[in-house]
Image 1 (cartoon, rainbow, N blue to C red):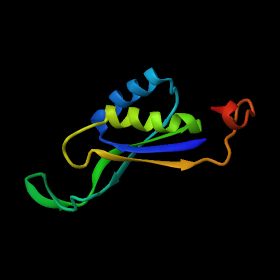
Image 2 (image 1 turned 180 degrees about the vertical axis):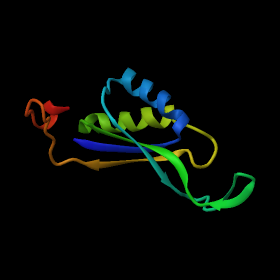
Image 3 (image 1 turned 60 degrees about the vertical axis):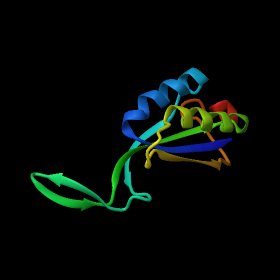
Image 4 (image 1 turned 90 degrees about the vertical axis):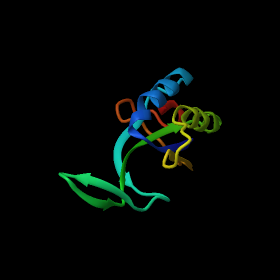
Length: 112
């Protein structure tokens, strides 16, 4: 099993979710996060005052999928969240050693 984690822009979440549902993924964790990448300083305005802001608000998506589905899931997310401007996001994949469904006690791929 693999943990696929993606950081995407907030306005792309619905597109990514729809694309993943079409692919067959029906569960994920969604979190609001802040961070920064190559663009360290951007000028923001708050109540008429300009200030430099290092962080941007994004959405973190986390999905546990079968090993064979991970490359396809990455491609689905990448296509649905695609943008030509910088800051479109990142996707990374990590191995998952174990998984258990709390309600039923199923383990491994049965718990997906």
